[in-house]
Every structure is written in C-alpha cells, then in structure tokens.
Length: 442
Ligand code: SAH
Ligand code: SF4
Ligand code: F3S
Image 1: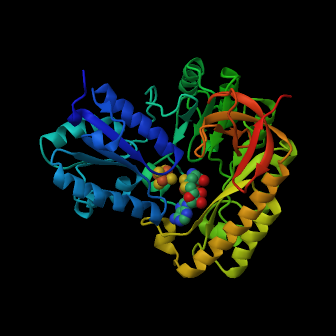
Image 2: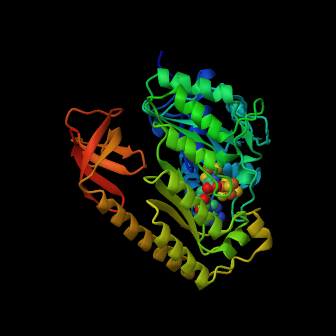
C-alpha cells in the first residue's frame, strides 16, 4: 500500500550526535503508529525540525528554516510542522508567536507524545509537550537507524554540570543513565545485525552510573567491548574533571575500543575555566593529558575551544594558543562565544569582548590548529593505518571514505572494498583535515 502524503514524515536534524540519535527514536515512535518516513521533504505531510540551541548561529539557522516553512504552509494548508529538541525546551510557548509556522512543540523528554500531538493538531490548534522527565531514558526503544555500519548508543541523557556558558542543562534536564543490562542488550542486537562501529553517547559519559550495580562508565565500556569484540567502540563526550585512570586503562586493555578521546578544554587559561565553572585548572588538564598519553601513546586527542568568553583578556587568549601549541590536538571544534538565555553567564557575567575581537581571536585559534593538524597529518604520510570504510567519498565514486581508530578521516582508492570493510591503507598524501591513500597489503 502506498503511504498517503498526510501520513508521511521527514525530520531535519541539527546539533550534536545525541540529537541524531533522538531523531531515530522519534522516527521509531511515529512508525509504530503507522506513519512512514519520506525519502525527502517534498514528499512529507509532516515536517519536524530536531533543533539545537547551543550557539546563537545554530538558532539563527533554524529561524531561517522556519520562515521558509511558513511560506510553504501558506501554499499547502495541510502541512504539519513540529519543532523538537533543545530550542523549544527553553523558549517554550513563546515559539508559537515567534514562528507562526509551528503546529506543535516537543522537548527531549516528551518524544513518546509526538504521534498523539500530530493527531491532535489535525483536529485543530497548536500544542506543546515540554515537561522534563528525569526518568525518561527511552529504554528498550529500537531507533530507526541512518547507517547499517555505524550506530549511536545513548548511555546517559541530561547534564548536571553547570558550565556557565552552556544551555544544555536547561534543555536536557538532569542526568540519568541507561541501565547496564539494557545497553548490553542493545549492543548485542547491533553486533548480531552486522554493525561495525558503535559510539556510546552522553553529554558527560563519565557520570554514567548503573542504578542497580553502581557500575561506572569504565565498567560499561569494558563490558560493551567484550560483548562485541569485532566491533569498533567509540564514546563521547568526556569531561576533563571526571575522566578516570580506570577508563584510560580500559581503553588500553581492549583492542576494539578506539584509541581516541574527545576532551573539551574550552580555554587555556585557568582564570577563564574558573569563570566558566569547569571545575578544573589548566595544570590539572595537562596532568590528565600526560596520564592519557603515558598509557595510550598513540591516542588521537581532540577538543573544543570557546574564544572570547566573558572577561577574556589578551593574555587568556594567548594561554589558549600556548595550550594548543603544547598539546598538539589532532583536531578541535572551535567557536566564538555567544550568550545563551538562562545560563549562569547570561545572569552573572558581562559579554564584554567585542565581536570583532572574538572573531579575530577565533581566527588565530583556527589558523594555529589547522597548522598543527596539517603537520600531524603530514607525519602520517608513508605509514599504514587501519581504516573502517564508511561510505563513498564525496569527490569520486572510485574512492571510499573511512576513519582510523584515532578518528582521522581517510579517503582511499576503492579497489575491491566496500563500506563496512576494515582494511589497511598506505597513506600517500594529506591535508589538515584528510589523509589520502590506497589499500595496502601487510
Ligand atoms: N557535553 C558536551 C558538549 C557540549 S556543547 C561537552 O561538555 O563537551 C559542545 C561545545 O559547544 C562545548 O564544548 C563548547 O565548546 C561549545 N559551546 C557551548 N556553549 C557555547 C556558547 N554559549 N558559545 C559558544 N560555544 C559554546
Ligand atoms: Fe554543557 Fe558543561 Fe554539560 Fe557539556 S558538561 S553539556 S559544556 S554544562
Ligand atoms: Fe545542541 Fe542540544 Fe546537542 S543544544 S549540542 S542539540 S544537547
């Protein structure tokens, strides 16, 4: 039977990997009630935006999208538009007056209600379902997955840290962990279905606790890697103040846990880390990096940096450049600060770094990091690396794209290989973001 357009949906996903995982959960709830996933937006009678509120430009992009959808709704009176995720959770009902395209709102803890919201919208009116529910983990829900090779496995949701700049605790609520047994069950199912890579997700995975046994994240990671010994295991995000030696030794002990850690530092200045409420100093961060590298000499390290946070002086900025030059991360996500309504910084600090200064500092950070990544990637030329092929390369169907265990992107000649294969690649050239090579016999 061909699905009627009114019963088909399409979801645009913005933001982090947790939002990507949530899109799979929302899709599962809608499919359970008989709705069909459309292959493109034009075929869908229900359009959902799963949104991100972390920076102002993320919100601007979504506003732009909603204006475009308003035009579309004027032409197509039956079209239903829903907004899920982090923006509605803190902007709440004011969203309806700001963006007339919207029919319903749902927050990260209320995705179970989405099919009934769609039904109710059909009988008229605009609806919001935005309660926090710190018991909601979506345990046992089988998400609709985007890839047959790589899967996200959320292990905890929410965040109890109060980093001064960050809106996430206000959009995702209190921390809660998925039961140990349910994570293991999901991993077993995914391994049996042929998945080659799993990424355990949480805003702050090191806060993971199994309510029943008290097991921590290192215990979970160890058990997951033993349950699926042929599958690459990754995880994100770790908080520098919480990452433990036992976690690092677990990574070293288990060959299928990728040698890769994302450890956001935000700034190279301890004074700024204090204002940001990060709960550690730069000396402590450097100690953690030294500990990680002493146990995992080949680890791929990446980080996040915010340029121009409240009160940042030129010397703080210089300290960030120094830290990047010393540690030599493989890669970094770099942003300039934007105030987020409701955060500690918005309430108690002054956003006093002028925008041109923020942008200039960010550019200096990006230039330095690109140079470092370029140098590190050049050093890889001539080496043989193990790559999990993920997809066809964007540039040519004759090439595949994949990643090393350290999370470096590699483009290589396809030859007889296909996505999902694990193979050795000889690196022949490099830019600051990608390694290029050909399959190697070793
Ligand atoms: N839970 C993760 C991700 C948080 S959001 C973590 O703790 O690392 C991802 C990144 O966005 C943050 O690490 C930070 O670098 C950046 N970010 C968060 N709020 C921001 C803001 N108001 N302005 C600019 N960047 C911000
Ligand atoms: Fe935001 Fe900090 Fe929580 Fe990360 S740890 S989500 S930056 S409050
Ligand atoms: Fe954005 Fe929400 Fe993720 S604010 S970064 S989508 S937790």
